[in-house]
Length: 502
Image (cartoon, rainbow, N blue to C red; front, side, top):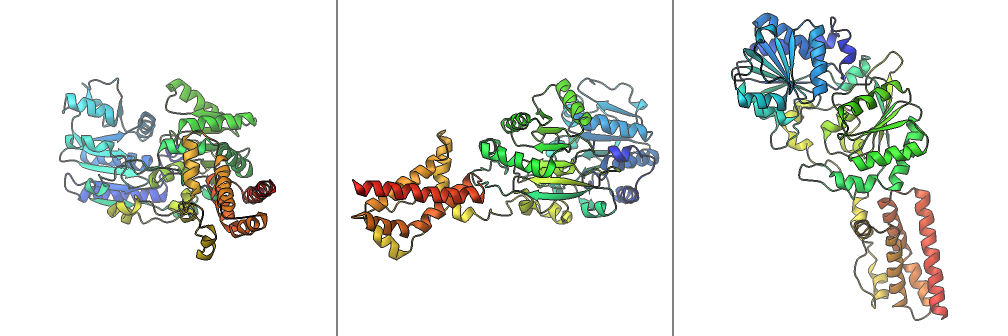
């Protein structure tokens, strides 16, 4: 878990953790029943050790029980370990726990939200004498469904990103106020988190589609990121930045992650794939391999964004795009753990995410995020090439007059490219269609070869524009685009020469 380093020294909190505990505990003592508090602290800052200390002090002072809610079994078990080390008797409520007849033996409970919801639906008195509810990963709105079972108690939510997972249920509707902990930059400066160095590789995301949840769809991700050119870009980035270091690769879809696995395996790199379809044993074995393999690579589908901690990770590769500020921070946070011989880590961005959200360590006004979440749930930028990609080249009027015998139908490369992908055709068919269009327009308006060459030259800028559009669609290098442009002009010129020689 993210707090492993702090848990090992649970008897002595870091100064900023001690300050946070005192601040939160004092504020909880001032709040009336049913008033809820939210606490923000970056991933890796030690949220579990902080709320475990708060639970301990609450139990000692008020002689009432504390309930800690989580949404992943790994988080529940690891929270239990931290509480036990802090001297707090506790019980993890898993799906195997149907009844709790001897509750006096425990001063705290850790429960998975879905399991507890089922128990409370069967018996709303399933838990006795709860005075404080602590919610881990509070940005996840699945917890709200059981809050009504706990009247006249305070709820403390903790999260790295106080931005609700459901834009229709903002956190300010559940929590009356937010307490902001240390910033990422401050924790780096004090030596509690690693400095993250971001390497961004521009990727054309124009083919990605946004689903009803406001996030880029998995399907459109798979279509883009399984392409050979994107797999090549990922390998190139790994070899340039991350080679021979422990690396986590985050993908949006299983097909992409498996394609990554095959690409890296073919190059002889030590890599494993992990996704949500794995059995518990397969998952444990895979993570165990990753921990033991010094330069291991683990490619996954966002399954390791929470409840996973491997401090030796030195590279985080975002082989995907996201519109979720929370997910962005969760993924990068997996590499931020400090070790005696590790003070920095690399962030390889293949989804324009740092352009969308700024650098990971960039200051964020979390209080503003809390009160105005809608401003952080909308797309905050447009790719610099978007305008070019959705518009045809605009010929000057004097040139248009030379093509009066031709159709004025626009030729938008991106639209043709997406159509080709949907029909299962190779992207290069777009170049062939473009050349056919130019050939027809020139031959339809030129009486001989000399006039054809004159019209050819008038269309030269439009040709370059289309090749540039196509290069962005397939994420080609500048050198490849230049070659494609020269090849296009050469082929079209030879075809015109052959046509007028007949």
